[in-house]
Image 1 (cartoon, rainbow, N blue to C red):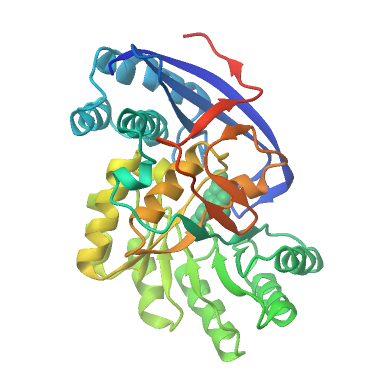
Image 2: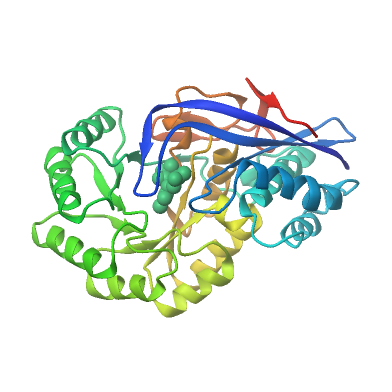
Length: 365
Ligand SMILES: C[C@H](N)C(=O)N[C@H](CCC(=O)O)C(=O)O
Ligand SMILES: [Mg+2]
């Protein structure tokens, strides 16, 4: 099975409700879809969101990175040589992790199709059913409480509460949600870099003292402020998780050795795809550090790939934040992983199992 062509499309899917974090507000998923074509007629699917505020990647940069730097190296390559292809992708240019991820996902999809096995089996196997949390956007307190109760009624047992807007209101937001859902759902907070280190310690200690039990707090301070992450991690009981602070394996090693966080959030769009996500999981396992696997605003194309990785690396990926498809107003994918609110399950279809993507707008090759 040899690569013959790489094509692009734009996928637009409205969100059920605006997604609001300390960094941005978004009303629709608008992602680049990559299809990798082969001489056997098999097609691999990948996806990349333009999360410029986190990865620096835009629609234009994703398409240009693939068109000019990645695709020319891959045409003619044999899918069976997976490690060689991932090395070609990763070394084709610096950064541009979302572009690399989209292409890698499509290549891994084809690798599974080549051997007639679902991707998670090619990655080592596991239990093909996992449970995700759901994100509660930062908003007025009453709205966040109502959204949290509605999520719990839909069966979500873990809520990822967005904070990081105003420290005083943030504390009240979390207290109100905790009181409303106590005993029915676990709470994770994600400040998306919105606090200073001292504010984070103040807020988390206030919540701890008030008896609010939090599963973890994600990325309390600026991405580059590793000293700030360490400062917070050392001063609170609640586990601290690094998200925007770590993209690839070497950054993860540095962060773990600094003891700057307790947990790592792996996202394919930060790692540049599946190969580095697996490396990070293996590194974390060596150090005895737990991981979450998360997503950006992505549909069930690229999130499916993250699900396969989560299943195969369940020994170390103990927390799942793969709610992108649940946030979308509809599922544009025919086939693939089944997203049913909090429960996500993988079928026996080869690769990612995607048959078709509805509503894809073709972009020039
Ligand atoms: C969608 C996911 N639950 C999530 O919250 N991801 C954010 C970043 C998403 C974005 O801004 O596109 C995160 O974990 O920080
Ligand atoms: Mg985060």
